[in-house]
Amino acid sequence: MANDIQRVIERALTKLRSEKSRIDRQVSALETALAAVRNTGSDNAVAPRPRRKMSAEARRALAKRMKAYWAKRRAAKAQTKTASKG
Image (tube, rainbow, N blue to C red; front, side, top):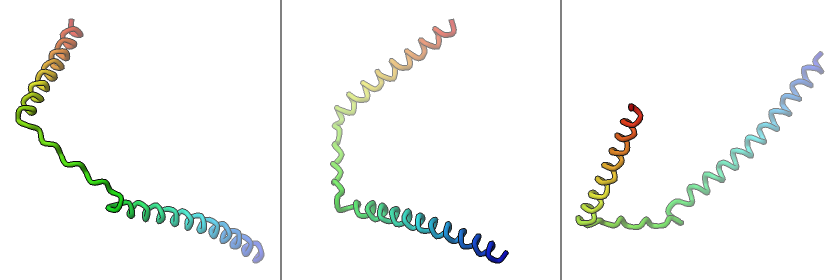
């Protein structure tokens, strides 16, 4: 009976040790990946391009185009609502 208990405990220890080694490998891989991510910060970063400023005339032209665009969309939506009610 003592031999059976000893065998069961040894088998459980063997399984746990193999699982521990698998988990250790995964932890190591994740630590390596994290170190790689941390190292790609400022060294290899490409400087962002400065924002281009839009002139007042360009803003007015864009606003005019967008107002026409949204008016057309509202008209199309209203037309589909009236068509579906009829």
